[in-house]
Amino acid sequence: MGLSKELKAICLIFLLISAVAEAADKGKKAKKSSTGGSHKPGSSNDGGNDKGQDGQEKASVGSDGGTESKNPAPGTPVPASPKSGNGIFDVTKYGADPGCSKDSTKAFTDAWTAACSFPGTATWLVPTGTFLVGELKFNGPCANKAQSPAAEIRGTLRAPGSLSSFTSDAWVLFRNLDGLTISGGGMLDGQGAAEAWQKTTCHSGGKCKFMPVSMRFIGNNNGKIQNINFQNGKAFHLVINNCVGVDVSGVHATAPEDSPNTDGIHISGSTHVHVTNCKIGVGDDCVSIGDGNTDISIEGVTCGPGHGISVGSLGKYARETGVTGVHVKNCTLTGTTNGVRIKTWNGSPTLKASNFTFEDITMNKVSFPIIIDQNYCPGHNCGSKPSAVQISDIIYQNIKGTSFTKLAVNLICSSGAPCQRVQLNNIDLTYQDASQKVASMCQNVKPTLSGVQNPPACA
Image (cartoon, rainbow, N blue to C red; front, side, top):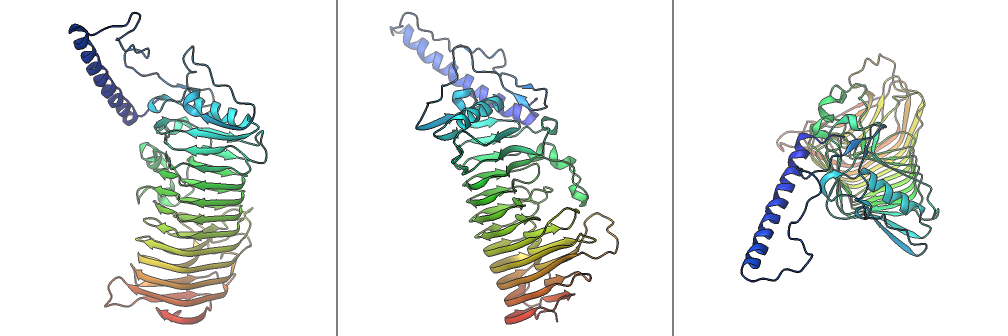
């Protein structure tokens, strides 16, 4: 795998700084020797470097399109795993380089393999530093089936810039693990600007070209993702798929406002997923809730820039299943294109989307604060067949703030499956220019109203 020009430049700067420091150190020692300083027999002051003229080991590309790093230097044995008790499996002990001078994919994988094989309580550790890593697949089940190794990420993982380095839809994958906790305050830097954002077809809203997500969480039960940072993903930053019982807290995700398809957190096919106290500013949905979900809660999320907090889109594919039990509470959205949104495709299969509550939400200059869009069809010729997604039992309450446009409430339901039992309770939205009023629009829905209604609902 070749490094991008930007990464090579960073590495060369790092090496030049090291060389200058080394030269200064030599000068001090030479001066001390010339003035009578002692020199121990057999010692060396040459600070030898075995990495070749340019000081950089070159990563090679494996046959699967991923990367493989060279084994630790001769005389540096791979550490043996303890037989019981607690085990710390530090990736640098397996040859990972925290100084960005070589690829560390193999070292990361070897450390995980050892941790997963350990029968006791294990921690897979990424210490501080910056590590260049390609595709990483951390699969279970592990030897300790009741408690997967903890993944403690303190440093920065930096992805290859080139799409040719990827053969799958995930950069970092955790799969089929029980009780996994990912934490540590570290960063996953997806390097999306290097190539991916220029080559995606998502700008036009059409079928998106394959792009690897930064972290994919598949088939994991009773897991936690805490205090992890993401930036500049090639596509979605964090995906939770087919999981049961996952708590996500303290996650930060950032990408430019115009970066395509860079959702912060996407959830699909999962049950009992709770997202709390996260800060997300990206180029697409801050949080997107796809099909097949049950009991999803989103609380204390700060969103912006981005496309808001969305259920959907639903009904694009024939095999999708319904969504029930979504609770979005105590969130703040600033400068987003949408606030809280439900979106379904024209001509969809028959699905149910029910039992959603959006409450205690603050909008700051959000273009469309409250929106149901059952004519969702970006960049496609969807025809005139209405959506068959049945939306019901939806509550919007205690939503306040400012709208960037004059259409603050926009409920466009399907003519083929009109929305049922929608409530608007205490809605207080004003236009960014307080001297002008906001409006609402409703189609194929008759909401129940209570409390403050600003704008007047469906008037």
